[in-house]
Length: 313
Image (tube, rainbow, N blue to C red):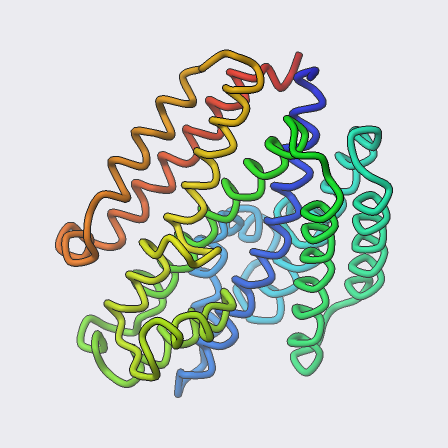
């Protein structure tokens, strides 16, 4: 496969996942803000910092408000990580690699783009926000579903999956960091009813509430939720699940091409370094520090994959 084709597939699916994850991050901020008694406008700066879009926002706005932050994250064309920008980038990459996609995948991607562009043509008011976020999640899921159901399991599929799960792992680490490090009102709130409500909100934001209850029952505590979202190998949005899928699909590429690259050793090291500990050890080390280390390792892995598979040649 040409490097530019691999690049287009990787970034098509990474951008698609980013669009959904950004909408989930907005939803997380909105739900957690509802647990506050006082105004929470200032906390949206923390949400944007976690999404990596705060600097661009501050260059163009004098103050942070909830409405402006949500608009920046959902539909600002000046923000390359906004939902609208990410969906547009996904569709553009899909056009570049259209011959590598099935007709069903292309149609699903095109429909996703048109629906999102229509709904985000104007500012989203607070009343309509849940419906808009649900629409984004449904259409991105449709593209993934048609990919799963119609694509040949070859290098095309593997690059698509690697892009998806690299972005997903990055996102779950960021959402956990929003909760634990940024949005908790104070250290004294750890273990309180506010703390527990916010952890429950994180589960809802990543569609993990039902799965968690199947495993742990109705009594939710922060340690069990963190364990579920970081280490559970069955939860499709956990860090372990996502990193395992990245490793598996890289191994399939190594088998298909008969060649291993530095990225293969890098993902093996990432698994050993971050997924071989229990949750108590992670909390003892510091959840924020652990998540920041994972984010740095994931960014380095993504860069190495681009180099190893010559994405720009």
